[in-house]
Image (cartoon, rainbow, N blue to C red):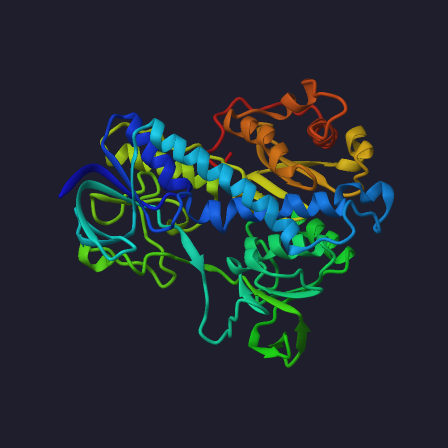
Length: 474
């Protein structure tokens, strides 16, 4: 029986970063991956595929140039599912090759198979041919990720009624689509297919979507979606989904009946913990298969077992999962680890993009912090005009007492790139003066920071800053 300092179950963002971090600390590390190739959900069905699909759709449709050349403009007149998949396969091969090289360079051992606990420090790995290998581990990191939630009353058929993993395997682009669930995944795919000129309807039982995003940004985003004829139905639950002569019918609780060529069910995901035999090691997952951990160390209730990534719940981002995995690995092998930064960026790769970092206006109000906002529209920048942008906005929130930046929120082209400027200022405790007094490249979309800063400056005036220590909330 082989013995390891750290066994990592899963090779997604959290797992691979954890394994490499432990290996760099000269620990003996094993990664167990049940898939045929490393990378986990992020590489094969989640982050990389959806973002590749988005970029391909925007390029082939000429979406970014329609502001100049009209809505009928196309780079490729007839776009097929194979066109989208071709670029996806090239990207996935590259990602797997890079990851395999990283494991080899850092001497991380790999094993293909399904892992199950025998006890807290013993794991059986069942290979595809049925062979079972038993391994011993001083510490274990669970980075198994999630899989689509598939309720029994939805008649999935991998054709007209599908989940968010199966959407990558569709044979033809649908002319109409109903998306059930207005979470991040549902909205990303809904807007991508809308950009491909699919008639899209989104059904969401809550009265709004993306509740963790600044409300003003969501309102602007919602306006853009409805302006391009996407139908958004809030506050309505789905009573049933039926197959209908090669199409699908969705019946809502209020009696309304919707019909489309394809239904995408994207109402949540569940942790892929069902096959781990958690009871044998003393752990129990919640009703969505997620594990509870210490948010600072990512240690579970069992001292030798850690968990990171989507399996521990929000924020379920590849970027934060990587950092969680790295911190967890350091704690697992007894190495010192610093606390994660207070603010991290959240990116939603919809069309248009949304990205946010820090406090929303609603959170600032809830905490009772006196504040002011500055807003810039991308059409106000020369670069925005050059690019033909008539939408997109950047919003910053500042403390009136300390003038410190409290939050930055962006919707529009390049939002997930632009947000990092605000993230740096937030974590370095920067103030309004940074944006007003510094020079930004011209013409760039980043110039929106200067415009929004000046907008806030004009509203705030040259107030005297109190010489006090800012509260933790600020």
